[in-house]
Length: 292
Figure: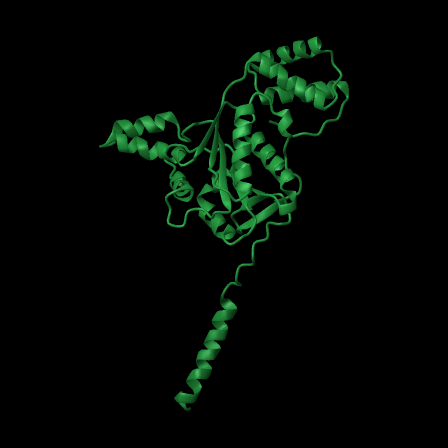
């Protein structure tokens, strides 16, 4: 056998075999077919959402200041102007996630001719795969809001460090076509006792605390949500009742709404929506809307 003539043929056969074993190149990501997607890290796909679970901005009462700020920030982002990552934090049931979805829908209604924004939800437990999601989105022309609902971290978790690098400070950072919105019950995304423990056990307590709270500092826009008073709660109930045509005298509506809030032990947008659902059921009225 002539080694000189056989070697190129052998190398070609090896190259062909390796090519067959190699995974196919990733397909180009298409996020033009829907308004919203859910990130599925395994196998690394964006699953389209046929109908977004959202309410109209006009139905969200008691959060007018937060609404205006988030709406303006999102409009700037949609126009390709500088905009901030946003953290919506505070009381449960006050419409944090509903506001994100409502603002997304409102901005898309204004910019439908240009394709609008994609809303991509990443679940809390998948935050560690955020760099992989950004790798998928690099080079995609459509602008996208990454949305994580109820984001927080417990003691011992280190996933927050991946999020810090993505929001600001990493070598690659996030693409210009991507912005990150998150909701949380915690202002600093970490439990207070976790921060306090770091302060008491660290050689340099100040540096340890800064490491923990610097995650929320990477959100340029902070929007706080607080428990509502009775007048705001009644405005929420009346807004829902009017929108869905629930024919109840105003005084009776307030009486029943007040009684419902007492049985729940709180007043919030979520409690108002749950009352309206109960009222509509008793009246035999079918309604379609998203929970707050």
